[in-house]
Length: 299
Image 1 (cartoon, rainbow, N blue to C red):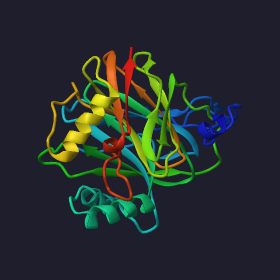
Image 2 (cartoon, rainbow, N blue to C red; image 1 turned 90 degrees about the horizontal axis):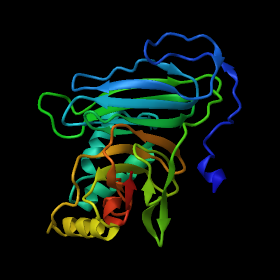
Image 3 (cartoon, helix red, strand yellow; image 1 turned 60 degrees about the vertical axis):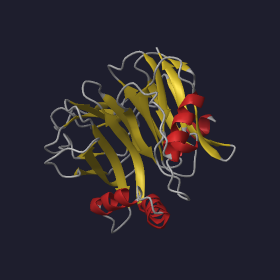
Image 4 (cartoon, rainbow, N blue to C red; image 1 turned 180 degrees about the vertical axis):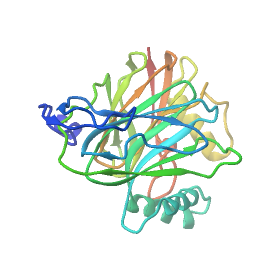
């Protein structure tokens, strides 16, 4: 199991390297690299600016904050040749179609043409960080509003070039492991029932399609069965009272075989349901509807 979880990590032995400072974008003094560089990103409705535009392969942390009540999404995408961010935006609209003849091919094209490298869902006053192990190539860092907002485009995007020799960097420390797995032919999360407050999770995607880890607070005593009953009723068009008591935050999709570390700040202690709302490539149904959720007591 350890080999699976840490297969994307480089050796923990430190090596001399030249790094960039996230705050200024200037070159730092050459030294020993032991933890990932951090890109601090303040997400707004007026655009997206990456504080540094060049990095070497290895672990990199994206820390997102926002003051906007709508919340924001930030995705780290690597696109197939000839595919544009606008193409991805179009497919994302098609996957929500009620017509399977539209939604299913759109999901399959999306999963074929896009390598998902995580990202964050962030709410006002509650920073979220995601650390990912990036291979050489061109990535698109894409921001969008978590809810419809008048007067802004559907997304902002910047490119991030990853090139050069690999940095030897330890992945960030984590408090718990969250596995996206397949159990009995259905997607599921394997996770502890209790963790400390403001946790960091190492998330590993062991399924055959992209998965995310979106956390929402729930009423005390909410069970996984109650979450499933809620999703079943929603799918049937006869929704039950919501068990959720607040807005969502967490990690956006990672592709199969990938790992990431997601860390929360300023989250209230209590019980949370983690769900994956990515789509099944055969039916276009949200994986949460088919059991991809887990209630965890976070302090």
